[in-house]
Length: 210
Image (cartoon, rainbow, N blue to C red; front, side, top):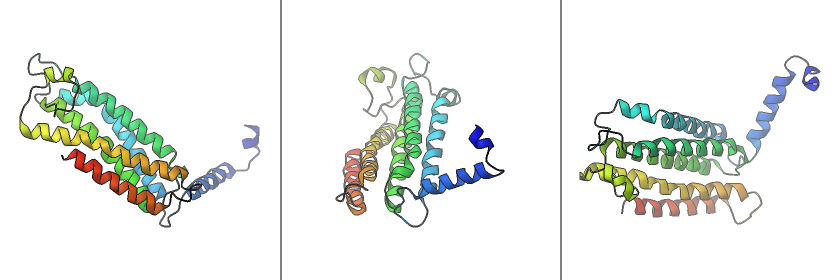
């Protein structure tokens, strides 16, 4: 505290600005200054998803036919939507917190950001629709299906596709892992990270839409 008090007016702000500039420089291999944009986008997406998870129970109160068709109560998927949103949101926030440590070019930063948001929100929307429409999409534990008896093709298809978007966490983690070791690993070039990521994306999408 005494050290900060010895600083003149505005010195503390100048130190914070200098620290921010130094953080922005770490791991930024691109040139268009997109690091802060993708980091804030990931951070906001994470906070919003946690908020949606906390509001999940309230959301279903105002959704028509969101209760169990047999007992009149909520389906177990409501709890899954709450828990999953909180966990996925915290994951996005944690990733954003170390964003400046990743040695990625602009294309790979956008790719990691896109994969993180799509996999997290797709997973959450899948749970929401499952709880709303009582459609398991053959994707939940069998113990859940006793209260999810909707056999209509379309809602089950939508639930299945959205939940399987969680597979995109695999290429996302590959990009993040590559960005973590890229500075020390000569073989982990930005091109290799991107090419392998797109191969994994195609594989995951094929598995999702199979």
